Amino acid sequence: GTYWYHSHSGGQELLGVYAPIIIDPIEPDPFLYDRDYVVLLSDWSFEHPARIISNLKSLGNYYNRRRRTVGEFFRNASDKDFGAALSDYEAWSRMRMDPTDLADVTGETLIYLMNGLSPKANWTGIFRPGERVRLRFINAGASTYFDVRIPGLKLTIVEADGQYVQPVEVDEFRISPAETYDVIVEPVEDKAYTIFAETMDRSGYARGTLATRSGMNAEVPKQRPRPVLTMKDMGMEMSGMEMSGMGGKKTDSKMPGMDMQMPKEKPKRDDMSGIVMSDMSKSEIPGS
Image 1: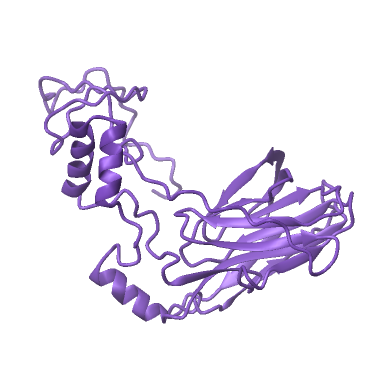
Image 2 (image 1 turned 135 degrees about the horizontal axis):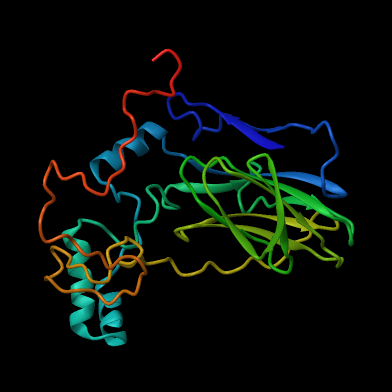
C-alpha cells in the first residue's frame, strides 16, 4: 500500500523531512493498471516553522488576509435583510471567531508543491492514451487540506491509507494532512490533463500534468471563491434551542434530532428506577 514517513522534531516536517513509502503486496492488487505514479502534496514556506508558530500564538488568524470586508457586509445585507446580516456579524464577533478562518496557515506564507515542484515548475507524468494510470496521492502538508480533481477525467478511488476499498468513482476528493488515496484514471485522448489540488481555504493550489509527452500543458482551472462558514457549519443552529449571546432567538434549522427537551425537574440521586444493574461483584477482567 501507499504510506509515508516524516519527522516529528522541531518543525522539520515543514522543512521537507518526509518521503513516500510504497509497500508491494504479496498477492497481486485486486485492480489493474499500466502506470504507477506517486503524487506527493506538501506545503513550503520561506519563514522558519518556529516563526510561523510564534506568529500564530500572538494572533490566531495572523495568516488570514482574506477576511470579510465592509463591502461584503453590504452585499450580504442586500441579499437578505439588514438585520439578519448584522446579527450574523455580531454572532461571530461574540464568539471571537472569523467565518473565513478555515486554515491556520495559508497561501500568504505557503507555497504548495506537487512532488517537490511549484505550480509553475509543473510536475508531469507521462501516459499513452487508453492506459490505466494509478496515482498514489499523499498529503505531506503540515496543516493543509487539499481538494483534488483532474478536469476531464473521473477518479476511481481504490485504496485509502494503504488499505483496499470498494472502488468508488468521484469527480473530486478532499485529502487531509497525513492521508493517502490511490486512484485510477483512464485518459483516452492524446492530450494533457491538469492535476489540480486546491487548498480548502482557496488561498492557493498545487498542480501538475498528465500528458502524452513532456512539455505539454493543460488549462489550469480558476480558483473558486473562498468559503464562508455559517452558524450551521459550527453546529450552532439547532431547532428548538435558544442560543445564549444570540439575542435569545430560536433558529430555524431543521436538523433532525436537535430539538432537545430538557427535564423540568432534576432526578433524585437515589432514583434508579428503570435502570437494570448487573452484578457489580462480577468482573470479566482476568485476575480482578
